Image (cartoon, rainbow, N blue to C red; front, top):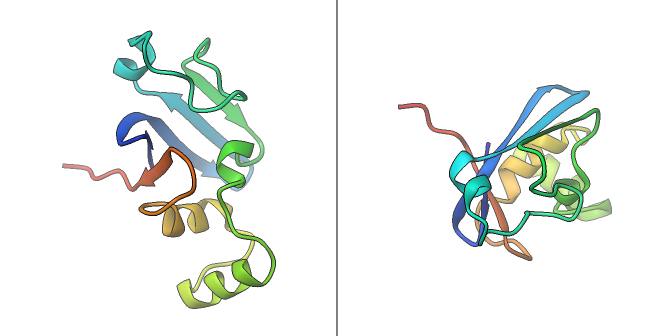
Length: 106
């Protein structure tokens, strides 16, 4: 998925499997000294980050408890599918500067 900060493409987030997530800054975003890091945990000192878990800055965008159960039921998602839930719920109206969009291959 594409990661946007205030409407500007900042990078991509991929789920290679349930235990490997990769965030990569977009080249243009990374090169622009005026663009800040999307998170304190993902500074612009590296272009690519990998993790066994969904990165905290993205995981914290997800609902919890009853709201999460309701969203997963309505969207027909596994409650453990953090990546799928992020894709389904963080495309438009989010708290903060980060939004996500599916990558459209042309």
